[in-house]
Image (cartoon, rainbow, N blue to C red; front, side):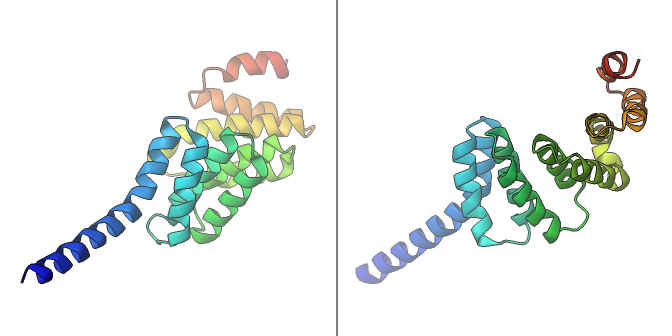
Length: 174
């Protein structure tokens, strides 16, 4: 009986530890991300991504992409956003963040396309990203030589509540 209880306790403990560690990868990765410990976040999120859980996979890729962006690995961030977008076709935030990474890589055409997709697919619960997407697309357009459309985007961003847009309009559009 004692051996049976020991074996049962061992199995229950290992099952709990296994399940707990799998569930904690995403949580630990996000916790590290919000503490700005990006390398640790990348490590945890990589473990979560390797599980390919349909419920957490796109979010883990997006947070890992944001972590890579934060440490200057813009190409790695684009790769993670690509995978998240492939998994969930309409993911406005992945398009938004991928646009940011592409702009850092001087891929303004790609950034403009991503910001446009974000703007066109964003839902009301994420509306604060719409104004930021217009702002960022405006900069990408200006940097690609399309000052007219870029300034139009900056004006739209300002109308949607991006207060700093008006200072940028004075700086780049007048």
